[in-house]
Image 1 (cartoon, helix red, strand yellow):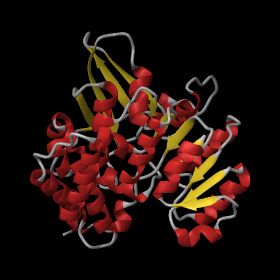
Image 2 (cartoon, one colour):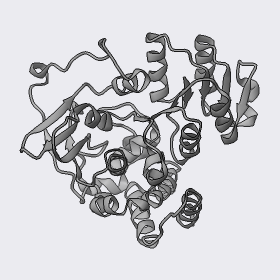
Image 3 (cartoon, one colour):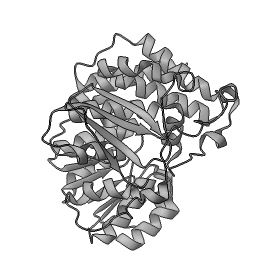
Length: 355
């Protein structure tokens, strides 16, 4: 396989499974964590390596190292592997997703932004999502008439904080997720609930429906529910571990234990909560964004800028949602007619939010 984002949490888990399944890793693409990348190179012996920065090339223990976005696209096209796992973070992941599809390769997609910003233009016929929620929905689908779909949220770092404390929370507090160990960006997005908006948009494109909602399930054991026309509901239970969706994205059919089963007697009870706008202001646009999915590019660009500002201590936590909501109001009438438009809108929104 070709692994984009090898040093992140999805990438590290994907390599554990590649080893378990004896999969050949032809390409490793990483950012700036050269120490971990060198360990991965030693163990998996890829043919190609791509990193973010030219100045780090000499630090990489490999004879065939490239750098930059164009190099990622080139190795996707040049490599023999017909499977690409895209675990890049942010808008950067879109072009590699498009290149993978263009080359007729299977896309195992952990990069949420590809569908959030350009779902209308992404061919989903050879795509497998790597996300516990979408994997759960896919797993539950039956040949029965569906009424609606529900995904779950953990509630993020501040689900139990007093509301009056939210405006002064620290970066360290925001990055302290109660259930998952994830990268900085997705952990902040979980705390604002923007990540769940992304997942609803992804589900809209993957399953061709806007009858979608989300609720908080505090233990992250139920990931998805499908509500059928007959009034019944099925739920997908699994421990909070990304190896299960990754395993199916790599192999499609799994006949061995990937995770320990959930022991309901040990769990004892589950708690469900409504996602309320006084704690998660971004949630006020949930229905609006589902019915105007073309604005996903605005949502993502504004949020990426706002999260970077927060992590750089330039704004407070609640300002992340304020900046995003302001941008959605400012650019409410934009509509990408082509893929090129997506990139132009992204640039314009970022420029507005930076200023």
